[in-house]
Length: 323
Ligand code: UDP
Ligand code: MN
Image (cartoon, rainbow, N blue to C red):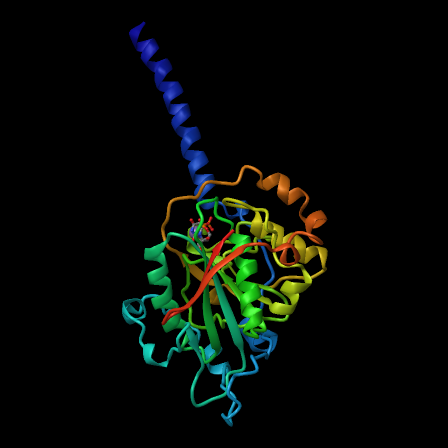
């Protein structure tokens, strides 16, 4: 009888173990939990897809336009370079406020990099060091804007991005890159400039094992023309806490028939610095359902916040706000 009992429990145990193992294998290995296929621009089409546009104050003195074809053709893995992480190599060439223009050639692209931020000091330090080293190799004109929420209400990422976009437009930037502070590009050729269609730049993220979870994912690092951002009334100001605001942005683009694009995977690999998950916004699904209904009156045209201060740091322009 004891043997029979033992056998019975052994079977149940065995079955549970098998089910567990199969679930784990399915979860880890099968790609169909990700978008199995998505369109992307191959290397040969990248330069053509980029929008030539600069701010007015970019020096017209240079005779020759910078050459980007080489940067794209020589795309390579650079994240392992120790000196990219150690200190800002060309610190002396970066202007107060975190602005850089190549010398010796005329930049073809001007980009405002907008980072929503609160209380991630270690990540910010890693971001600034790496990104300035990375970006100053791309021969583009750029400036980093950090929009920091200083109140203690739930984090409102989309509102901070709207604020950043507004400030960047004041500076005349024709192209916005909305950038999480914890995402770093791995390959040198992901040019930080806008494409004709808004671009999802971090489509191959290590956190997702370099797969795209779903085709409509449009968050993390995205490039969008300032004019297009204004056309869609920016992002919703109503997402308090984690989640949903990026899907809302995608819905806004779709509502205006603006298609998105991505570059081939070897240009779009990113790593995400480790952090604890944030508190999700319980209201996000309901908000998303009415995304396009709210679009005409919830966004850039309804942006209300308290500007606390603007400070020019050596490596970035800081915009302190109360939401
Ligand atoms: N963020 C921040 N402080 C916070 C929450 C978010 O600075 O307390 C910013 C930061 O730029 C971060 C981005 O918002 O990268 C997205 O948040 P999070 O990384 O938590 O979301 P994930 O994309 O990892 O789900
Ligand atoms: Mn993150």
